[in-house]
Image 1 (cartoon, rainbow, N blue to C red):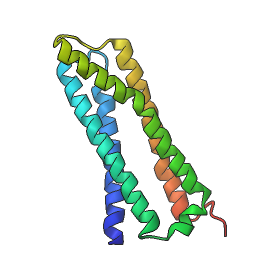
Image 2 (cartoon, rainbow, N blue to C red):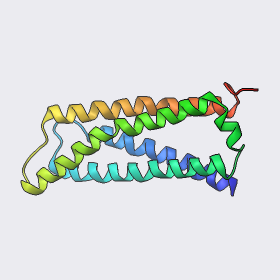
Image 3 (cartoon, rainbow, N blue to C red):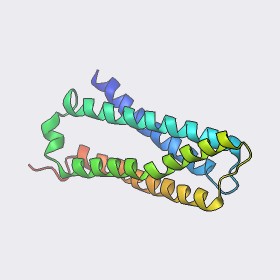
Length: 150
């Protein structure tokens, strides 16, 4: 069971990364109406993968692995949580933008998102990717006990 939960946690984290990279490459100047629907769908998959990371992480914390005391006594664990939360918070503006674009498309099929709005969403996605890149580093440090109180 422990291996299955660890696998789900890693797989979900890889999917979060894959969906976020996909968003970054889809959300570019000249975005066409058909791509807006795809972008919104990928963003939903990103959310589902992030929830899977969270649930599998909680299971690893409390039900399997090294035990809650190992993680909760390590400052690296809190850094990892803070990074995960930061990625989640930074993902809100692009998600809201994708929703606005979809509503605008439903109201007027020919509307193409403004390049300024696309650029803004893309910068948020890039920031998410940068923050996300540090989570595995902190996870490795945490798993090695670096920062743990001995």
